[in-house]
Length: 181
Image (cartoon, rainbow, N blue to C red; front, top):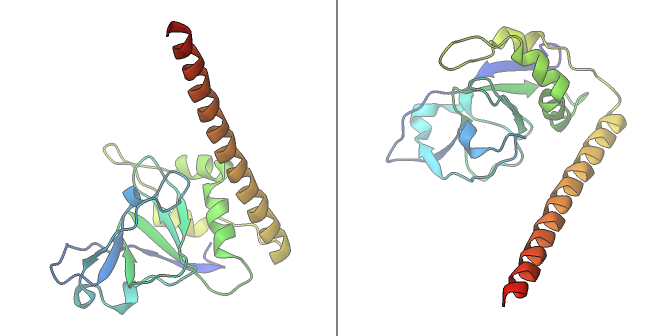
């Protein structure tokens, strides 16, 4: 990873009444790294400083706990930082798409490899050295985009199948209820 980007630890902050900065925490994401809760500002810019601010394209990796996911930061409407539960990967150049890096980190094979290095008894964590030494295969950008598109379509398929199953179950319960009426 160190060939394609710089990895740094997230920021440890305390909530501030003069909040201007969003403070991303793992609980705001689902297990696949999708943001499911949009937090408001929680930290002061004065406390955070500019060097910790996230930029579009930064990849967050949740290194602490049992759910080690990656998320790619898109456009940010407010200044934001990642909590110290994350490593922040800032890519050097555009030979690799940040979304592809997040996809690769979330892949089951990569996850199994990363988890084999997890340490700790109470809260397990993955060391920064493990992330920086991880080799991400660099393939042509068009192939990276193809992988991401296929994954997006697969996610949509899973979502639609879940909705179909919910509708089937709802219909079945209506039929069963009509039998007793």
